[in-house]
Length: 604
Figure 1 (tube, one colour):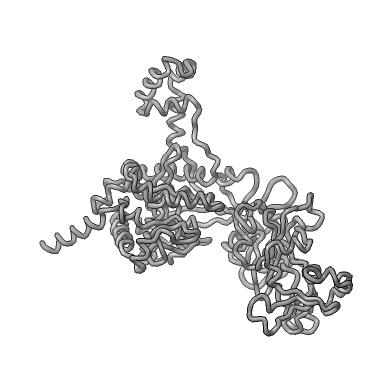
Figure 2: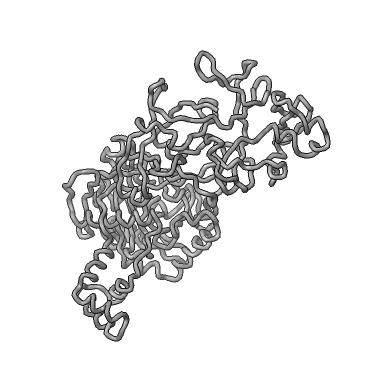
């Protein structure tokens, strides 16, 4: 195989066409090698300390992309041709033929016909490896191949043809690979049957298509499966993004520091759960304004686990947003500028405003997204890192984007009181069970009631903001802060836009973050969700979306572009927003108050 230069948009080089992904460009099927193949002088380094602190040792680099035609010295990503096996659309010859014409790589057959990549490739069920289907070996095996000596010892490597057989319908049974040397042929219908490659004695080579054979340290014993090269499961990207903000310590960590610094803390530790511990914990709690349970937890070293990288990042972001909300007008400048508005400065329907604890106009924010690696075939397969070079300081593909947005914080007490209701818990429990029963779904957020309600509201607001902000809905993104299991409970949403240039900071979205404009938009978003064009089917169904991970939510009411959603349009439910059946929504009663106020105003 040879290296080929092609260009993609910057965002596409992270996902869906990042390291290890197959991409079709100008009739060719290509695959992107890992970052050890990059020319580092054209891949400039990106700085985001808080993201690297979670990823571990390494460096973030932006993929070298360009616009227009690539010259010899133009910065660009390298690609390998994959699959290497192609067939001629004119003579149907099947081969790995390649060559140059007038100094450029040619994609034409000896007969002058255009070479088309084979539709199927082979991937490893567990090791996330990929390789060509060994078509010559496969064509000479299977039923009848072991009985015919001419087939067993055929050496006609250049006589393979990929043909369509008439009279077999339009399915795979009509497509055959035939050897004109020995006359043996096999239908592609045999290729996709379960364990067919294993029965034919074809094994995984234990490497990626661009890696040399010498890179294989140990054989891969997992079975191969033949799949279409454009199948979605061939590439499952593992990426993570972080807002580049001044890292703030969560409130729970600051409280823990105060408890440890208290003059009585040493006595509490010395008593070690003895009879005086309760009394001393009460003294410390009374002076610091915390609960005795919190003091005892700190003394016992019972701190929240930070093993989830994304949740750990969100904890720091949540603390930073809270500090900005308390600060009012932001005159600091830099890449994180947020004007904070308290509930006292917000007017509107009481049932809505009372549930809002603060609003932030995010005038500027920087987001950095990095690709950790990828998997193939299933989410349970082995993770292949983005840098397969010598062990040391890995390079992560990354991109930085600048944007603006709106931050909403909701009242924790009212939210906790609402989600404690049995009907609300039972409704969210449906998605909890389905998430637990879906192998790959553990990568999604835990669908507790607050997460589902705030996530659904975020989608409703994105759909409404697309009409008023000047940005298309696909340009808007969300970040949900809704977790009750952390030391610092979170309850908020961030809707922002991010682009690789100044287009993400034109001001149209942050302007709508002013409470005077945002409250009417929230009311309109709730009104949109009250009736779906697919009702009563939508509101009565609780098995919608991918893997049935949505309840009352469909394209007519709650779904947005998948690039905008954290979970790919999953974990949504309108009933937990506005209520329905035996469920009380968190914003139940808002529309009734607004409509009653409208009727009263008209009657006066």
